[in-house]
Length: 116
Image (tube, rainbow, N blue to C red; front, side, top):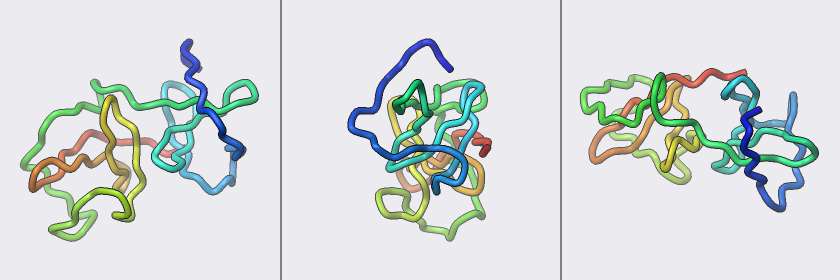
């Protein structure tokens, strides 16, 4: 678990195996995607995490990214059907194992995301 503890206030749901939320690998532990947050259980509470920008998960523009994982013209945003993943200071959407970021008229590819 990272040294910093960022407690998510007023969280009563218990995350764990079969809790109903997508489990993802993050910095050597498991987090759960829940309501636009990345939640790892931590010492009797839940922390609020985000994927760091860089390495395998850049935040660069990839205008030539061709994704056949969703229909052409699909717009990522609230209610689009893809899970929200906090990534640095922005949010991405989980699409077939990788992070999509809406950018103008295209999606940027912000790297793979390993599910647990």
